[in-house]
Image (spheres, rainbow, N blue to C red):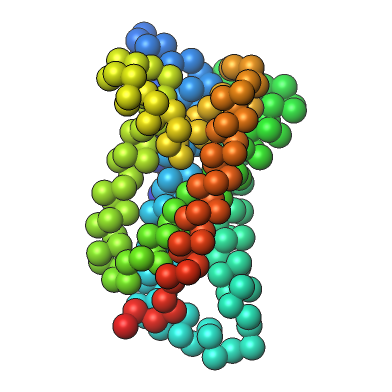
Length: 225
């Protein structure tokens, strides 16, 4: 049920932003698809993953797993694999819905690149979720922190291509995790050509993944107390 609700939000956003006479003011179809994917990635990675880990820690699941023969990397790696699988399904569903309701079709290689970028974005937001659950022990506190971070993570991705709020906001938005993902998704779907900014967004995304993963692993506690 949680997974279905997580999938519902980006799909509703995708369809809703494509309706009405003024839908073009929100950006082209590729922008709306990338926005829907970003919302789904933040929901699955930063919010959903961190809450699931915190709840399992509070209920003693990890404490019991640690006394089994399973190595710690296998315990956490299995969680990441499940989340990456969910992201893969979500990306495919969003692209299919975009084709059915928005009439957006891409060349086969662009579909592949879009899915690969979505998986990279998943690694970025999963590492952010890992850092949050590593620094915050209480599931209730983490729930509030995750909801607080939800808005800026998505909101900053909206202003990476416009200076309506000033050049400073544009610069911060462009190089935020969501802004880098928006850049890479636009390139993957052929909306913009690959450029130096694209390479910068790629390396920045890899850097975000490494930094937040190190923080999350270094300070992660297997028990809540």
